[in-house]
Length: 281
Figure 1 (cartoon, rainbow, N blue to C red):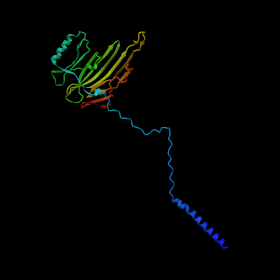
Figure 2 (cartoon, rainbow, N blue to C red; figure 1 turned 30 degrees about the vertical axis):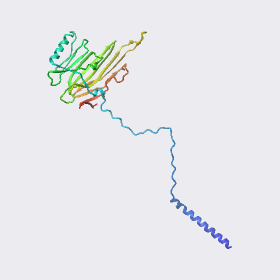
Figure 3 (cartoon, one colour; figure 1 turned 180 degrees about the vertical axis):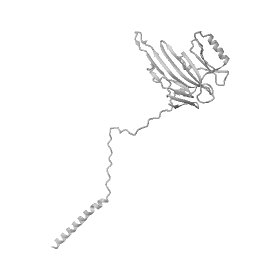
Figure 4 (cartoon, rainbow, N blue to C red; figure 1 turned 180 degrees about the horizontal axis):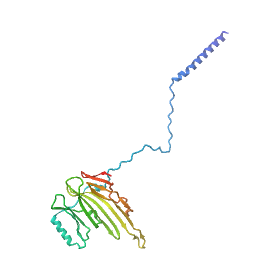
């Protein structure tokens, strides 16, 4: 009897201890450190990443685009003449020129152009610099028309680009190649500085035409069609600035060249400290 009461008391005590442990378990779990979340590595995918939707600003246009040779000065071969010597040269050329032609292309107080060979294709330019009342300088520009000197022409006038003591000379000239029915005229614009030794500070090819008639391509008499292409722009010098117009082109040149004229961005250019800079569109 006593043993049974003791066993019942021990069982009651054990139940009380188990109940106390269960009531404390939530509080202990509240202070427990949560388990770390597993790191998930994304699977590789073959699809490209989404493009960046951030808008990008357009690139700023270049301030100037000039052909390198247009920027670098080119020294000229020169020869000096007195006024009487130049008059004598004209008299000799006039005597050898048929009456229907003229040896004089231009004759002013500052600029003179003479034709000086049998086929009248070589042009000789003479300029009297400011302050040189009795001295003329002859400028050899025929290299620009090498191979294109048929029906050549040349006109020159004084301009002022940089407000310095020495003036500049604007020369507009052109010629062509005419053979076997082919017509290929072209024209140039040159600016010449007399600060120091005379030198070209600007030269650009500004018009070019290519006209090829139909021609026989073989002994069987098969004919190839001809071709016509033309490109030109206008360049003017006014108020100390060089204004370059847009290129107008018709047809495609037989050489396949897309860039026919000297590449210059259209706009207005100013000459300062020995360089041209684009100052306005």
